[in-house]
Length: 124
Figure 1 (cartoon, one colour):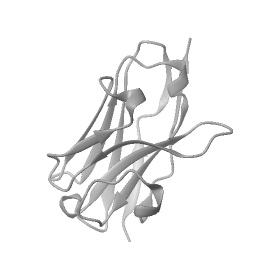
Figure 2 (spheres, one colour):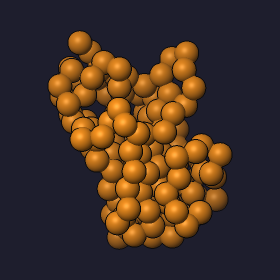
Figure 3 (tube, helix red, strand yellow):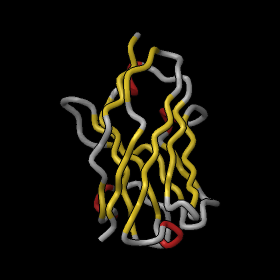
């Protein structure tokens, strides 16, 4: 079982930036697909971004393309989500997740481990 601890959430004005970090323990991230998901109040958890084992393949949901960047530092066992040009509709609890599947995943059911979810609030 992989343990995931996120940090970096908070309150920011629209147009601002935040960077979320997710530190993994119990298994090296070099053998894990990592993902970020978010859940707004009253909504289902939705896919945001995913990154492959080596970090060379990424995928994003359409609403964040060009604004968010997922990256990973396997030496530090950490994955990041850089969020720029934030919008009020990005407000949600953001979850880091880990999957042992060999390819990046968009579906929550393909992830075995989850972080606790920091709150990101974007004010207008």
